[in-house]
Length: 104
Picture 1 (spheres, rainbow, N blue to C red):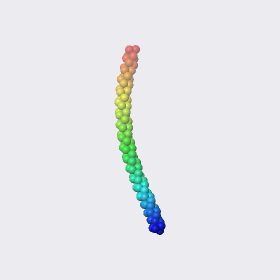
Picture 2 (cartoon, rainbow, N blue to C red):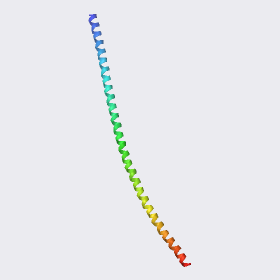
Picture 3 (cartoon, one colour):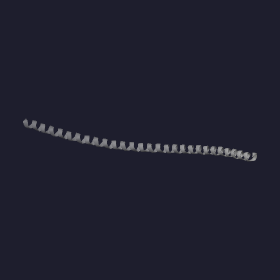
Picture 4 (cartoon, helix red, strand yellow):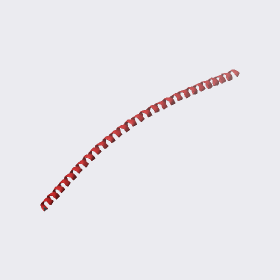
């Protein structure tokens, strides 16, 4: 009777140890799987952020080019207006000098 009870206790301890080992193995598998999924998620997030960053940089380049082109056109127009004003003033100055010379 004691021997049967001891055998049951030993068997129960053995089964408990096996279940603990199995639970530890399963938990390690779950942790490993979770780590792999986390790595994949992080990798995908990095790729998406890089793609978005490249897209934003491209948009910025286009906007900068447009700003420079627009400013260049404005500068050309302003320079042309200044040249026109200078030409008119030069003509007036020449006319004034000619009139002064003639009137003397």
